[in-house]
Image (cartoon, rainbow, N blue to C red; front, side, top):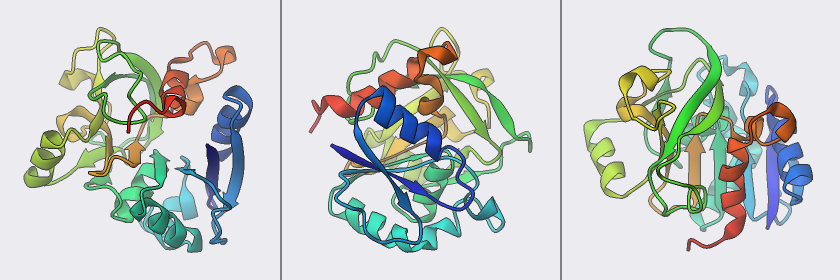
Length: 230
């Protein structure tokens, strides 16, 4: 599988993701500049975290119109894999590749800390090999990470098993006190109906190298490589 990490002006997690995929997981990985439109044969596109275009209008709102996004949207609509992390998740909702929206944190502050995630489904590349009884410690760093959607959309994504992760405590309990941003139903990550587009606010690439003292995020990214789920 060939990975492409899109670089927008303001991206700041592209190097982390590139390093993790290419050097830690030994995958064929390239960077894709936002002004280009050629995905260069990549099977799996990653939209990394950061502050694309400075988030001056609304997080992800301007990046959605970058030239490369036309190709990313086409790739996704044809069944190609796309993962958006943090700002990348915001871009995917702005592009309507994922439902809902990411709003300002309920405390109106930027939050940067480790949180715990509980996998909610086995039916996705991102979660297929994860232990649903385990709480994975993954860092977050965002000011607009509060997942919001209408009641109808919430019911739909629940019914379709589209929720990838929910915020939980260290013991795996999905409780409001473990919710770092006020996300509805503690939602930390979702996928689309076709199960080929994934978005999550926490940063697995920041918890992939043993030198960081935490490799829980590596398990999430390694799940992509197993290719068990179809």
